[in-house]
Image (cartoon, rainbow, N blue to C red; front, side, top):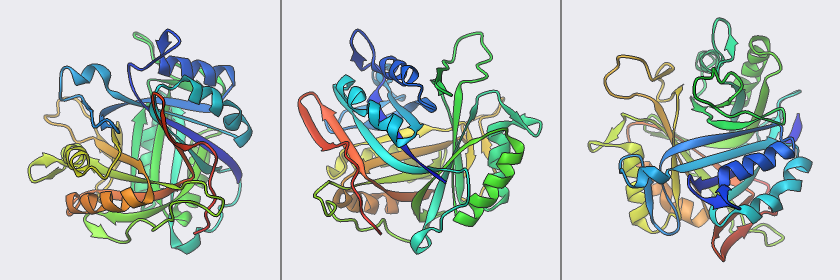
Length: 354
């Protein structure tokens, strides 16, 4: 396997930089640096350190929805552009995470932890007679993965070239990101099958912990220290996968999570992304279909924070996922939160063996 880095930026859609939207400026940067793969995803709800909620439920707030921009390449490529990316941001959250490109044998997962496998394909790419993302979810489900979600990109880079979704275009090459949660053995089997189905797939794996599934608690998030041995701050990420129509006390779980986390004053923010296809809670793969009343698409609620804040937030997550949902946690070695002149964290990667 080859070590790679994943740069992820959480922003409001209308943030600007140098006279253009910040997302366009960043994607121009990624294109000029020939970043292997990047994808822009639109969210449906969020809040940040200012406690301002952005949601597609409100006509005013839906004009400035959250967006998430992820870029993946070698440590040399990502490391060379981080400072330029940071310089563009006036308000937002940036994380840098380690991953491994699947191009050889899988490493053993210490402590029996699971992995998240990420596959990048084209929007109209086909495999086995169906859409590549549908075929991939079928593979993940058949192999017993705990869950998977497909994010539809609206912009990005593929092989260092910009690919933007356009009206009246087939948008064949606009990237789609498929995330799946499973064991190392399941991921190894999936990699072998996907390599046969999809020519030259871009597959990456990251170490995670499965905390809950379908209401069953397996483990709390790791109890990480606040900093590593060199004094670099450690951060942590919780991801809660549910269906959009899954409810707690009559309210969609992802909406209830945003509300309760915001009211707790422990969480510094959360972002909700809507999926196109996927599965969790042991259901078969599913998503939007024509002529269907209501929505049963997968959604993911993402929190990135200090280990202490994540420990508090997990209590809320645990309560609201008493019956539904897949919850994972992982270490984030670098996070930088920017709000004008206020900055928290940094972009140097911390090290912590666990």
